[in-house]
Image 1 (cartoon, rainbow, N blue to C red):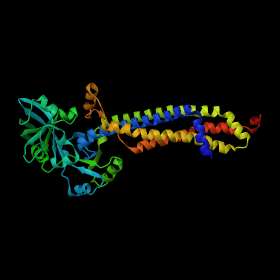
Image 2 (image 1 turned 180 degrees about the horizontal axis):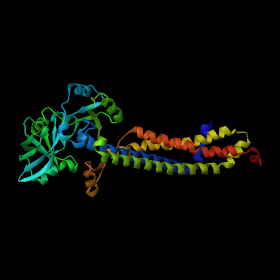
Image 3 (image 1 turned 90 degrees about the horizontal axis):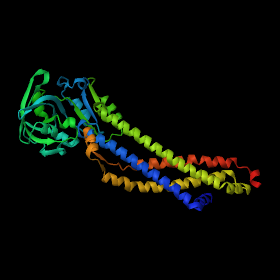
Image 4 (image 1 turned 180 degrees about the vertical axis):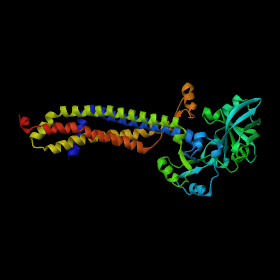
Length: 403
């Protein structure tokens, strides 16, 4: 009976109720869209760098990251391979040998980052083969090279041209060889596109005299939700001279950018909660003051204060539930639309995103957990704000009511 009475009371003033419900719907939809969008940007930034090149973490010699020298390369042991193969949390891993060399072609020279990759494993964990804009991915032939788009433009290199790599190999041996350009790649990062030469792992090992050696093993996780725990567990199984280095340490600028986005997300949603809280509180204050006489009469004829409090709470909760349900349902089509049709940037903004190796788009993430979280928070806020009405009811006095 109390619940029925509370529901009827809401519709005695339809305009006031609908305005409040509309504000709740707008708040939930806006919070869901904003949160989904910012989380989508975070995922986009992470996938652009982690999924294409670095991996979620890399297994390296402890001394390697300081100078990135071939002298700190290693031969993957059978024990290490067994550890990786037996870890069910891993999507996969690959082998890399990285070095530097002078690239010569068409009477031009330029320093380059030479990356030897296990081309078969890379197809399972990265998008190297899908990032080619000209030519083809590695096949059975040896002494082929895939170079970055920027490097090709700066050195006027086309498909089929030959490049010569000259440098210092493992333990100071001379490194020199020539390769045919079989493909041109665009990874989205100017640092990589302007300087990268990709070889098959065996060709890179031969060039540098680092036979069977690698400088890192990029590892890719199935899910990033337990990334820290997964890294700690695997690191505990490694030998003392190895480290599992997370991508945040290798690409600190991207990590800091993600931290700023998270902070902005929290601030934006927090401000939204404050605004909707004032809106709901204003409605509760109006409802309470408009019905002071009614509540006094109910108290005078013998209605218990606890029942009156319950009635007011139910009015607030029903109003919040109605708005939350509509907001929850309205959020999905909007968020899903922006997932299928992400916001695309052009011009200077797009160039700025590409400067960090990120595709200039803003997709959303469809996660019902996000929808449920904001809906629940709005409900909790509404119930807490109902304390104002409860406090007013507590102060009502039977004597003054009878007057």
